[in-house]
Length: 404
Image: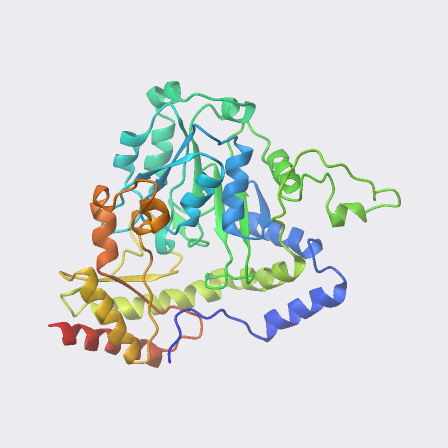
């Protein structure tokens, strides 16, 4: 059976994790701090904080910005539930926007229609690793009329003076937009290093701070570092830095979302070889699929490059023309019968019971539903061979032929 997306765990990663365990630093320590510095250099942003998940990172940022009851946060209708869940956790309201038919990303033209005096943030999502249109979104939040509509309620909101752009880049580490890496495209970006991501730390994530000059990004990093460790003024590394450094304070009721050095050990190895090795291998798999499916007029291949952008090649979102959701589901059953694991990314939020109960309606987001109903995500992982890719393509073709 060809799996869908197993992690890359080789001897180099195992050796580094063992070294971390033998070092005595198994919680947040020198490896985590080194990984943060490496990520900052890789992405070209101002500072980076590693956390235990992208979900935690998104919520930490929203709470730092003071998002709460009465506020609204704009999110795409087509995303994983975490993007909207964190808004609800803060007591705010997710305001959903439909997506573009070609990239699955939030439609910038439809964002402006949903902005109100209550809007505090926009969370674009780089679906499958292809960057959202950050030029359009950044231009929108800097529009003078919309800036006048913005109603700040705390010092951070007053200092920014506009809607925060918080990128959910869970899929897009290493993607490029206008010559810049994801992480340096907007105010703050959050990455995921979950087990199925291009770069994994088993579980984990990172917050890339890139706020404008009115902010000291290093100070924001320090605040969020404390906020993400129960509000404790010193982490374990700082408490062991001197003879009298054991004493600490708790300056706010914070969270517990720090990354461990064992996780960071995995990330350090993966980041060293990410651009020249991992991304190149994933790109080759995408190109194989693109070439193979180009000969079938019923296959809609995903956008992975254009004049502005290049994907991180995270998920291959194949769509099948003129089929229903039910037929797509039957195709998936047939593909599994050919010993190939596939998936669907994602069920749009209004299809999920939690959001149906809150009153969101799928019919209000026709593009999101149309994209979902005929989408099949194909395997993409480091050890996927050309022979396995051929088996995947043959399985999809066989499944399609069964429905003709």
